[in-house]
Length: 312
Image (cartoon, rainbow, N blue to C red; front, side, top):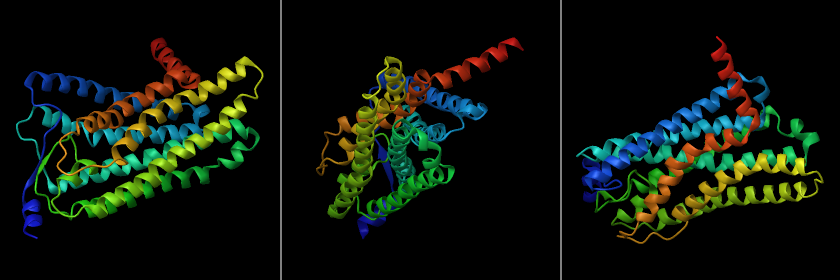
């Protein structure tokens, strides 16, 4: 009990990405550029979909939701990284650490499920085109979004409650933000329940979502192979390739970090830090560019709006 009280009255120390001064400046500049690209790219995609009535479909509804998630997940992590990269004081309060873990986990869970929902949407569009509007109606789309957020909130509340009731013997977090796999090994108490919960929820949310994506794309690819025209092949693969790119980047990193054993007092978590950067910083930055570059409707809308502004 004494250890818990000490923890609540003290602050965690985020060791960050590097302690080498010249590397800190480089990291700061790179992360700031990536963050600005994330915000501007996702906002551009949201505005583009909003101003073009032709893009008001379930696919783009899910896409703009993904952009909102990417903006918020990046904003919940990157500004603190930027501050801690150059600041001498890298501490974060217990409440601040819990809040950061809660919001990043809610958004991460929601994105996991949303990517599976988007794969199902593409499955219906390609394999059941005549029934697409009936199946992917507004009510179902809304339920799917609400469901993904609800699962994220429930999981995050349970995870934060389990982790922050632990006694922590070490308050130095060898990471750049408060993440469950980095916090659990720091406890000097029994973490069996925490690890079991993390593996179970990780398997249910990440693995199940990933398998749903795979099943959807097995059906999509088998349907595409039946298309005889090369133009039909190209159009169908172009529709799905961007989603598969995001899925590969996102799920691979998530499952490696959350579903592998995390031994106590392990200092070999540099790989975790790199992979966490990919799914919390790199992927949110790439998502809008992947979708907009490979999507003719989005590109045409942006080009049309730019031409209108030039003609004014």
